[in-house]
Image (tube, rainbow, N blue to C red; front, side):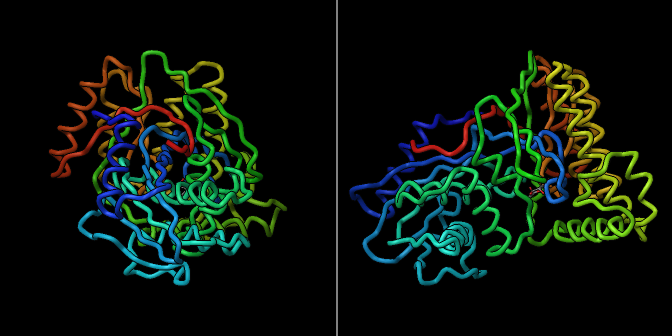
Length: 395
Ligand code: GLA
C-alpha cells in the first residue's frame, strides 16, 4: 500500500478544512492510530489478557474552537454527507447523526465525568483505516476526540483515561458493550511495541515485536462488520452466564482467573453446551496469550505463530465468530510458504485477519491468498503491510 506520509496527510486535511469551514486562526491537526490485535481475542471482557498494537494508519483530524456552542462535523471519508451540524446542547445518540455519534459520545462522556466543554468546535476527520474492517476506526475516532478536547481545554486526564472515556462512550452512548482493548491500544500505542495488557486490573507492559525478515500483513475481507448489529453483545452475555454458573462452584472473579486444568475441572457447572464452548475459548485464549508473549520474549516467533493459528481455530469452532470470509483468508494463508502465523483479528464476523509473513514471501502471499479468496468469495480482499506506530499526537 502506498501510504501517504503524516506530513502529506496533515497538509491535505488542513487544506480541506479551510475549504469546508473557511480560513481562520487556531486550526490544529492531529492523528490517532488504528490497532491490530496480535492475539487474545474476546478475552478483554472476560478479565483476560490481550496483545494489541497501534498502527501507523489511523484517523487524521483537524479542529478549531468556535465562539458559540455549535458542533460542525465533516468526514472526508463520507464527503457526500457534507457538514453535519449539532450542538453541545444536543449530546444525545441519534441514528441520523451517523458517524458523528462517536465524537459526540466522547464529548458527552467528558461532561458526565464533570469536565465542562466551554465552547463548540469545527471538526474534520480523514481516516486511512479501511472503514468497518475491524481495525478500530471507531475507537480511533473516540481517542482522537478525547485527545483534541484535552489539548483544547486542558482537561486533567491521562492517556489511559482517554481510553476509559472512549470505552465509556462506546458502551453507554453508542450501545456497544465492547471491552477496553481497542481504546487502550490506541491511546497507549508505542512505535515497534505491542501492549501486553491484563484487562482484569489494567496492568500492562510493552513488548517489542522483533520480526527478523518478516512483517505483519493485514488481509481485509471487505465483508463489513458492524459491531452494533453483530453477535458481539450476545457472546458477551453467554460468557457472563457461564461465569455465573462456574461461580456457584468456585470463587472466581472472571473467566480469566482460570487456567485450562481448572476449567476442565469446573466446566460441568455450565449447563449448556454452547456456553461451555464460549467459556472454553475465553479461558484457553487467555492462557494462549500469556504463552505467546512468553514465546516472543524468548525470540520464538515460530511458536508465537503457532499460537496465533490455534487462536483462530478456537475462534472458529468454539467461539464461532469467524465466518467463511475470515476462514478462507486464514486457511489460504496457512497454505503459503513463509507464513509464520495467521488468524482473524478484532471482533470477527467479517473484518480482517492478521498474519506474520516472511518478507520475501509477501508478494506470493498477496497473490495466492488474493486469488483464492476472490475465486471462493466472489469479491476481492485488500492487503496491508503494516507498521506498529505511536499513540495519539498533535501534528
Ligand atoms: C472488539 C471490541 C474489543 C474486543 C474485541 C475482541 O474489537 O471492541 O473490546 O472485545 O472486539 O477481542
